[in-house]
Image 1 (cartoon, rainbow, N blue to C red):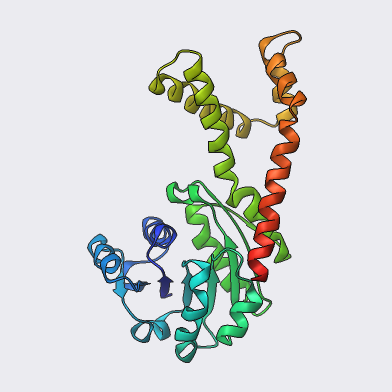
Image 2 (cartoon, rainbow, N blue to C red):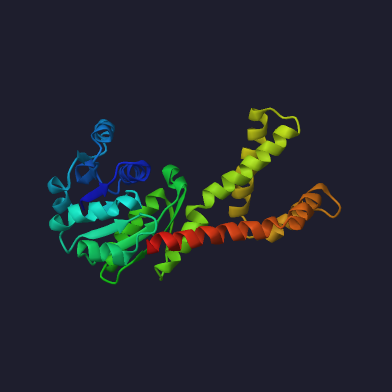
Length: 267
């Protein structure tokens, strides 16, 4: 199976390296289309496949075409690609907000998969949700899921509209976690710790907490109950969070991200 990744940025490079490192494909079957000559030279030096500067030389060779470009670049890209595509090719898009219908109408293609990964995919700890048209066969869908799984966990969603919700939760989610970590680090600094000490305290707390949670069957509420003894320090912090409605603010933030994802899809 020959794979063409369009876009040699962070996610395009992540996919190329993950596919090769997992031995799910080989360099001779990997192609990358990158319009920036400067980026193309850097990609060529990484020896992760054949790098092309235009679609004519590579698009028809591909069984699977992956769109890893900015959504605002898609209109021109689709116009350039349309004369060269084959109806039997499978197209996988990770462009935020670009709907399957938009891709289908622009390319005249039917086998389309839309996915939303997140940044931890760069270290094989990503979360990717995906949806597809009915024209994608079960074998093709499994093939693509196996590729996506090289970067972490995957989830097939029945409705394309769920991709917008995924964008708001796991797509944007890492930024929410870092925001909370940043706030805790600032609190530690104000308590007298150095920057490196504060980062160690916060980073290890998050790392240990997530690992502990994933290795147990307890819910978040149950774990909170185990840490927060009556009249203790944790209970004092949680009472402050409740008073300032942090819980509601987090939900409101996620919903704001969802609304923006929907807006991007309409535009």
